[in-house]
Image (cartoon, rainbow, N blue to C red; front, side, top):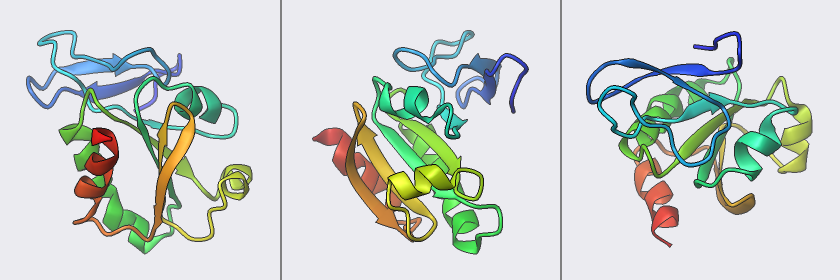
Length: 145
């Protein structure tokens, strides 16, 4: 959920407390109540992409999706689960391909969902039409290296 200052709210999976999470921050967000890492899932558009993705100190999984896309809805729970399971090690950024065609062109997105892993602003790997069951191992393989 968005707030007026650009921050989001995230529920801590450990204690259930709601926390404010900024789109852009150094490091990873942690729960103000119990101190555990929070899942970091944010939306980005043309104006926020550079700061949210390319300047991130954490690896970033970018999900190019669209509201009308059936496969995108199938992959979405797996993307959220990866964000939760890798909290503190990964940031997830969702980009609505319909609203940001410039980013789709820039990153040669030909179909959706397209998932791209960035590390320090550099594209590391990508998949189009990702399989929800293979997503966790694919992402983890790039965090380990």
